[in-house]
Length: 77
Image 1: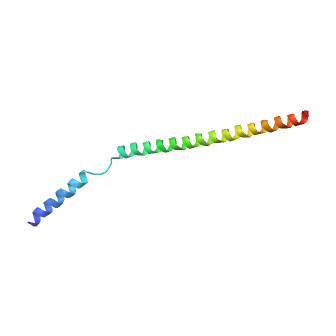
Image 2 (image 1 turned 60 degrees about the vertical axis):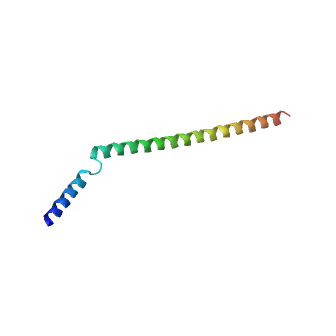
Image 3 (image 1 turned 45 degrees about the horizontal axis):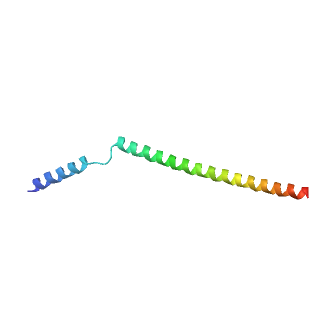
């Protein structure tokens, strides 16, 4: 009876080991997809930051132009 249990135990270990985790190729593919997604996210954040900086610069330029117009109008009077 001990031999039967030993055989079942060994068969169970072999069955469990054969179901193993991801292969190295699958893991490499998953890692590269994750890296690409991270790079895309970083690029999107950088683009949004650049757009915000440009909007701020445009707003400052418009405010300066308005101030210059007011100053020019006041100087003519």
